[in-house]
Length: 152
Image 1: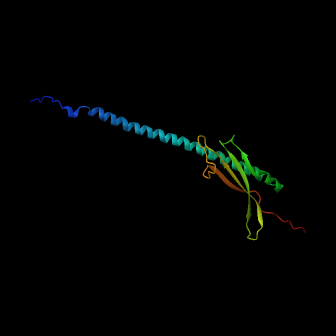
Image 2: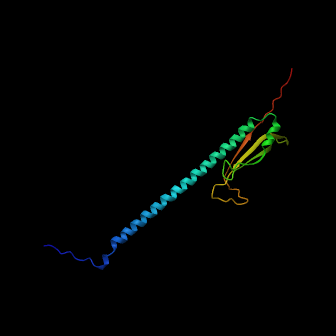
């Protein structure tokens, strides 16, 4: 005996469209998540590129200083702040001489310099006294020993 199809009634009407809308919503949230991850990945890649370029600039400065250690007074010509915005966005390179007391008697041993390379990523506005701005810092010892030749 065949049973006739019965109308499921008004309680079941529209369920398929609600299920489809929920599926589209879940899919849309997933796509937005992927787009957000990709945008974050691109920003991190740019930041990595800036750090790499800053490291190269600092090492290049140190290499130039190492090759110019005689006379020693030439090294003081490197101390200061340079605008390197053609190499990094909003870039500044500073070289500071570090006077270090190493033997505890007050004798200052020269030859140590700190090279700091900072930048401002596009779209970011640093605060006036922002100490968390991205930068690369390294210390170079351009000369640290003196030789005494005893004649005889």
